[in-house]
Length: 334
Image (cartoon, rainbow, N blue to C red; front, side, top):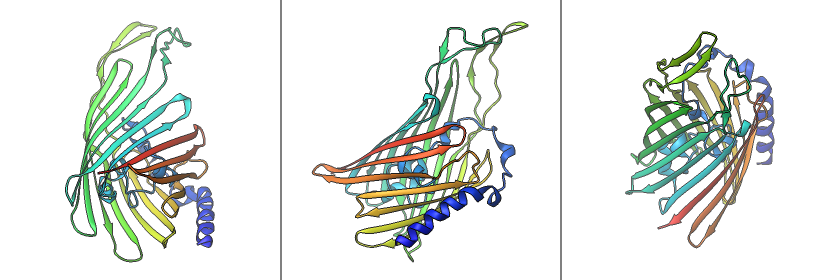
């Protein structure tokens, strides 16, 4: 197993420098063609530290974001809660909270909230480039309701309906989208396969007014072009290379196909000791902005009232710096 860990880490480092040759940026011309960009932000420490290669492996509350079918893999004897905090550059922050409950032997329900907000920023104009004295904030949110079912011993499916709202100063945009996906236990070699679509929906028109001071006087803008949503198709596989009583080593690969950018490929891995201590790493190929490989760790322990898990994830961007994620999970006994 030590050899597998060393080889995997060497592969992550090597692919970090080779991704431009492996995945040319054919989709770059689609950049900037959608709104609701906050939906692309990973919500939890575990999935992000594995480079986002997670839809086939996800088995906790974060499946409400990654792949709704994954909530069927939670421990069915518990009520599951998750809260996650992401600290971005420039003082921007993101929160995620979710809950999953078991309705019947095959049916699971989940609810989730994702919020992204900026610190206060100054209004600027052509004549007052250093600020007018007024401030505004950006605030985005997504609220989702999820239903997932175990259809066979090896196959599960899930669907999420989400309400979106994006607000910048006096302008806001509202929309509704759907996520859906499945997970399939291959039944051989501890392998799992998954596919999912996120943020499937229609265009939406921003509402509100913007008052702009120009050389020609004061203009009031109230009509805006419609915005599409950043839909994403993912195809992933997970393989337990080592699965013993005290040790588990899982490798994941995932193809990501967004509607507003080039395709990328994510590679990630997770080592578990007694399912109590976790170490993770990963990298997304084809994403020029990525710097160092992402990594993270986790700790899980039992108490009389349930199970507590804490996870940390680190990601690095060339231009925009470091991103830190902290996730707290609680599974309550029924």
